[in-house]
Image 1: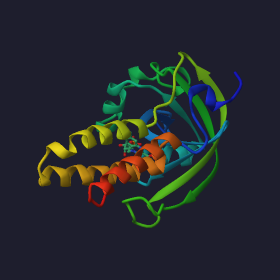
Image 2: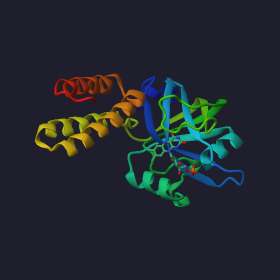
Image 3: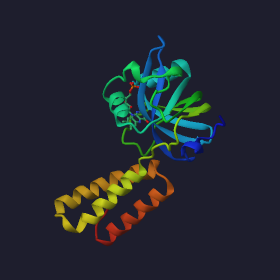
Image 4: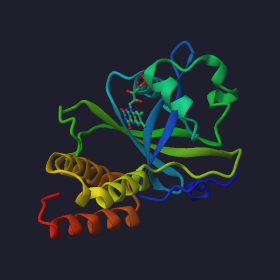
Length: 208
Ligand SMILES: Cc1cc2nc3c(=O)[nH]c(=O)nc-3n(C[C@H](O)[C@H](O)[C@H](O)COP(=O)(O)O)c2cc1C
């Protein structure tokens, strides 16, 4: 199949929540949720903190699979423990993946982003990869968290005048964090929506 990540809704410059599957030196499978940034229609970027099995396996094998799924059970199991082997299919993809793509590492570099709350230098590695195979099992779009934050921020905004000052402060704190994340990973329309909500909060006399 043609390698074009826009076929699964991935736009250049936006980040998506994916499940990365890797093999260790004994060829045992591992899965973990990881953000995947689309750098071009056949190029991606991951930033993975040191200490994870995923990073060790990627450094060892220089290849991995990015799976697209919207199944909360897969996210839960692979974050809170180890995803059991029965969930892995042939070629080490996830059996339930709506789509997956195989990646080959082109570069590995130490990096810490200014906007990240985790500031310890040298804690993360930025991995640039080329997509060498794309498999689409079902019509699907990779999941971007931005829209969820926009809806949540709008929902809180619609209740803003109905709550006391303590709750307003909680909404403002949540908005600041949501805005930080959407600015970092969201689509243009999500970022625009957050800017507009911010303007309205300022009009009300607050500092979001
Ligand atoms: C939605 C989601 C996205 C995540 N994205 C990243 C990421 O981009 N980089 C990272 O280092 N960890 C990320 N994590 C945390 C790892 O998934 C977590 O540390 C995991 O336990 C690593 O598992 P492993 O040791 O099997 O690789 C994310 C977690 C979740 C739930």
